[in-house]
Length: 248
Length: 323
Image (cartoon, rainbow over all chains, first blue to last red; front, side, top):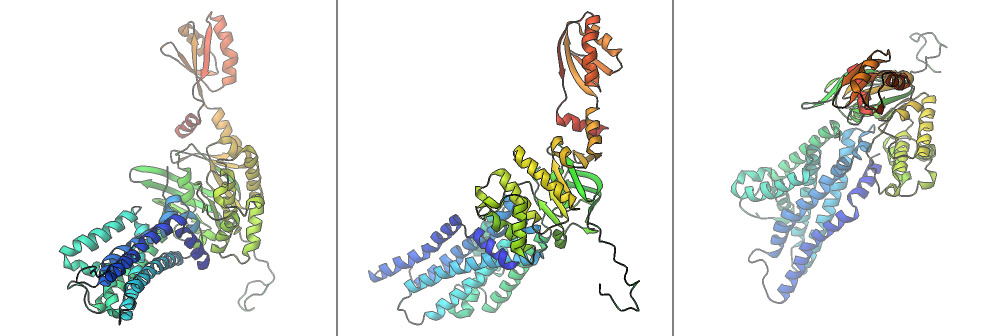
């Protein structure tokens, strides 16, 4: 049963237009890496004193690309079906609700991680080609991005079952909460998936703090796991009590 | 039939009674959204055979169907499927096939893939055979390998029915199944519903057209403004609707004189003088039309116009609510 759900969800999520937009987004860091190599070869210095890869990985991929991809895939996992009414075909089945949630999470999560991970890897290969001792850093980022992608996906899938405006809510979370407000209220880092991802990346090989206001790797792992599990449980509960919107 | 040990089993050799077809029972079910009551204190039991749910648009038919299939929580009362609650019990979907009104189906899947999707999620042991049988039942063998997005409205309805039937459910609920069907497809669907009922299934479908309901349903439930306005054999419902008092507008050369003449006739029970118009109420249009020209002539009044004023289904329904 789950295989069938995975298959149909995959076909639905990876529809032509959505995948195209994602691929375009994912090309941006790669393009930046190419520019970097070109300017480097031409003797210029890209990104100031912070190493280029930190700027691209932290600021662009983890902060922008990853949550955006997770948002688009995560909210569409149930969102598309709720909107056009085809959710009834999923709900009218003797399948325990947790299995349905798991299937959606797997597809949306895998799509997010593969896309963001591939962008990271290609960017790293281009930007760090020939630079010694960077494989540990790249691995660290890949792990951090995989973890962050999984956590974001859980949260956004849950969000799509809580509100019909999941896309906006998710954007507000990423841009306002994790972005703007986090600069003023350092406590927010305990509730920021971006910080979990960066902390996990630190633990997995990136090493060193990104800024002074980040999480210890241990904290990041524990908090990240809690948030992912809590979001999944909320999603399961909401699906179990889901009521088909009436048009009358 | 193998049984438990002889010491504790009941009389050996007595065949078990056949399991009764599971049905649906509603007990004082209501559903509201804030201040709007969509379904108001409805109770009934559904058994084998075809039942038609008749009501004007906005009466609550869809809401009721969603309540009955476990997709909405009742605000009050209970909905029971096969003896257990319908809400938050995914297993009861083994017993129910639901055909929603909304057109959307996964348009990128072919007909076969859509039915197979339903069959697999139902956990059927022999998916291919079940899919083939369901598609053949709705007559879509020729179009089965085309994407559902290319189907006409009527074909999409039928593939939805195939998806709902693939797991051979004893209960079938259809929300406005005849929408978008041409007369030939409608006959096909009616024949299918008849066949389902003959096989002992519990079938309920909704419609706002009495003729659609009449042809197939033995029993009709009329719902108006969220309330159960009438319930019974379709002939009884039809009689209720035609025997109701009708209102007519008459224009004549002398309304007052005509009114005096009309009020004496037994078929007429109310006459109202308005501006240049006479409103006449009678429960027997045939008797009225026979009587009126004679009455007008003997009163020396010329008739210009006689128009029934409340032939709409809505006025029929409001009459039923007020009864």
